[in-house]
Amino acid sequence: SSGINAEYGGSGVSILKVHSDSKFERVGGTAMGGGTFWGLGSLLTNAQGFDELLTLAEEGDSSAVDLLVKDIYGGSYEAMGLPGDLVASSFGKAARSRI
Image 1 (cartoon, helix red, strand yellow):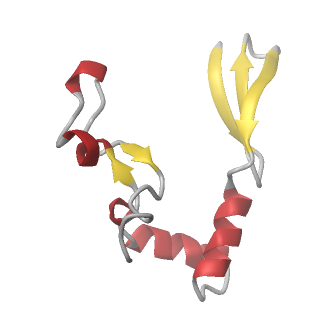
Image 2 (spheres, rainbow, N blue to C red):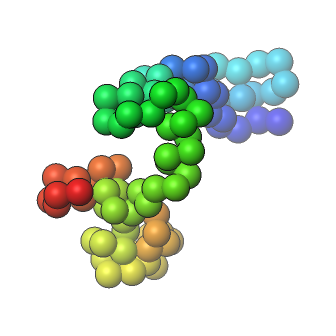
Image 3 (cartoon, rainbow, N blue to C red):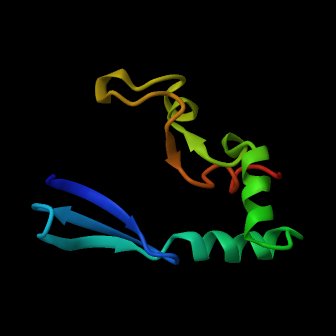
């Protein structure tokens, strides 16, 4: 099927425009992926590996450091259809508070 897909490659993420089952093109991407998670996690914690970092992530509360739509607008931003718990800025609260 056609559309836009995100493809994880291990250390980054490619954004692919899919024209058909056999035709696609890379239209963008980001270097932020699993390698970034592993590297930052290794610097910031005492985790002994990727699986332990995943467990820590599952147990954590990202809303303590991520700036959410509701933090900016006091709730959902109805005019744009954005729910209040949508991340507006990853680590956006980290600059304003001590964790």
